[in-house]
Length: 518
Image (cartoon, rainbow, N blue to C red; front, side):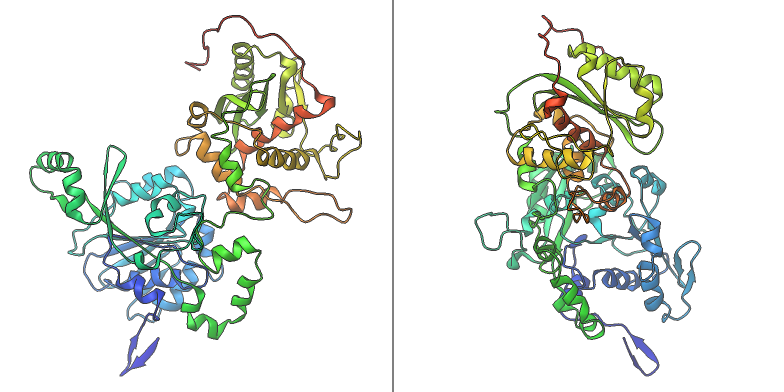
């Protein structure tokens, strides 16, 4: 920022910032490395049309604390916006009021928070760290991106690379997808900033290199929409342009001047994190602290060679809290059924477990339930069901008979689960993987999302292996718990000799599925 004749001039730096601020795209995603100045660019975008009467914008973070955190979005806006003449900050509502317009900072912590914006008309919408938001939240707000102030509505979003996110798939055209390429996972330089066009027809994306190409592909659909609007819309209203740019900390000369040590901090990260945060690699998913190898984890949805075996149930109990009650039905290490309830009552939990056991011919002694917290109430209601205590002593090794060197049973089973996944022992068929986990994700999507939160901690003073704390896991999952993987992990408990399941012959015939209307 500089001053000339008492006029303050805000200038973008060459490189990333200038490219981001000059893009004509309806939607621009900046999937750049850490320290490049992504948030600063969003704040600059908020100033572009502040002197246009009726203009307004919203800049989102997933949670309110992320906005108010020291040095966060609000603090950064105060440093920049306070220099604007007649700019009025309102910290209680997280708004900046300008003579003709306003910019608001808001959160969308929960999936349903998107409906808080129903009926809104917002010319400028921005997402800081887009990978923290769900696909439904993003596209719902796309429907609120409207304008009557004369400014063409537009969306800007920033994020660090996250190979497990929906964003990675959305911008894959700009990223080298060839595993044999030395540039695998990096942005394709000649595609940076290039516009692509898309239309969503019946939940399907139709892509093209020009607006006209997309229109010709979905002409009947768009023409019908125009006719239904009585001619008040045109084809351009149904086709959006999307672009992607990258960048690195080396573009942010001002940061390097003020805080050169930040570059050292990025270089000190383990290799996978350094590839993501310093070099902006969208395929750097391997992390030495990950319990589940990302590539091997994806194999559980295609390992159709996994054989059937003894049947059992693993269930992670939850009642009316924020966690979900899950039921996994296993045949060997093949998942053959799955159910989930949210905010369930005690009788519903017991009924669902019993009905599932009946339908799949599973004796109660082949049911394993999480006995921590609210799970304790199951004891006594399902005679013979087995207990899983997360914090209990690790079980003895099948070969040596000695207890393994873990700090508790939960860590032991998670480490063993990761090893078993790496060996290709698990399979979740498509019909089970595509079951709904909740309104925003299938079971497959949920498991993939939770995978990145299951990490090993540093060994304790006795060298015992453990997981990172649950609160640390929640930091990877926007405050949620890994409920699905907790139930998945419990399957390993049955492989200890001391827990051998009771073998029974399958019932003849197939019972009517009593869960259809449950």
